[in-house]
Length: 158
Image (cartoon, rainbow, N blue to C red):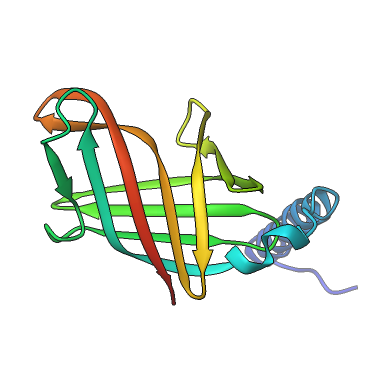
């Protein structure tokens, strides 16, 4: 029997440990697979905002279109309803991950990340490759002061 050096043994043990870790990870994940939701088929894919207008509830004369000011907003919807939304505005970036569902003309976004979890609902319509969502949110019309806002979001499928 050939004798192996300590470094060769450590390397083999490390590779076996990594292989076991990944095997356990993937086997563990396979039992948590999420099935496609056929009712969301029309929403599946990548969307990019053409406009994202926020209007103050307290003063409806105050509104801003974040896309017109240089921001970008993208939405990715998976067949399971899992979504990722990314807003880049100025030097700030915000990512949200969660579960999307629909019922009639209502859309519900159940955010899982960032925590704490939150649920947002609104109305949506789909016309060809254009998705429109209207709902409520908060926005800093005055820096440092969050206030209630009406959101009107128009996205195009990419």
